[in-house]
Length: 433
Image 1 (spheres, one colour):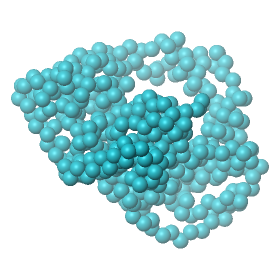
Image 2: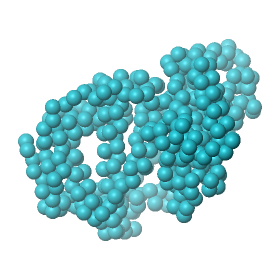
Image 3: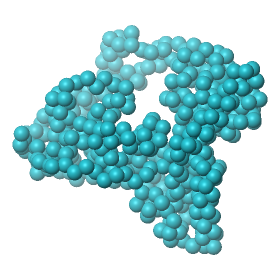
Image 4: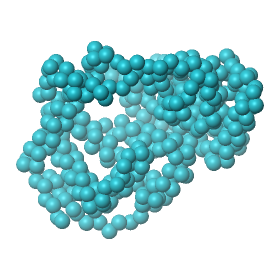
């Protein structure tokens, strides 16, 4: 319903969609040299350069200060790479392995988020080029970082967390020391919305309908899902095989609902997400989750498609400013199927429960305010704030578990630093600079 529209993306109803990845240009060649060898694993000059470029890119994306001098950045990044290699060496010594399928899914989710942040894949690729990276460079670097993070969590959970104890007096002391930093509970807002989807061109829609029709015809006549996937799947690797997924791991609520509503051997109806069109098959149901395959068609949205949607949203906003009732305009133009039949009425939400893009637009909006159109992964939104109720500061009892987690996190960080220092005595670190 409406909540899903706020938290995720609007659906293409085999007539609209969101962004899709395009093939990246070839990586620039680097003249490499070995900087450090950690337990027979080399850190190359190219590794360091790509990591530094990624550091600057992510700092800008998060709005964080990026004012350290380059020598400091290089030293910190290199030390982080050494620590990662040490932790991986410890993990592998203990036969800890990381599943590549989950890493690949997280990498794609990161790319999708960046595409949404920059507005299109072309703009993302331009920003990457400014940092001497291609999309393939970013994909490889992100995979490496995420793999390191998985190893880090595995090592922490096996060797460090069991030795961490958080006492009640520590929780109380931490709260007392940070009481002034406790934020107030978020405001709640009663909202109405108008959503204008960004739709691909009619030519793209017709092409996708033809592909979908061929797939459904072959499945309908009894062809095996794996065989149809081999013929038609356009996802990464074009194999159709996804593997094991658990509840909460999929990037799309609509996709997750489809997967976990199916029994073993069943195939979903087409599911549209911000990435494209999915037809999902449950290969096996087990105690840990479901093994699935899919037939995936990415859906390309161009700058022209975005421009058309922006113009439509601007026209709707102009009608509102001219005095037309919000409910009338919403009923006529909004594609939010949960709210449009009710004149755009969504319900009441805590500000912090809304997606970041929507939260930013509504942070200071008073009751009665109408936002200008703004772009989200779902399309262009216009919101009416019907009511706004101020939040209140949470008590210690309400925050006890969060404070306990903060104390535990601090202790884990300190223990991890000691653990990594110990790894430097267990594994050889040979610096070549």
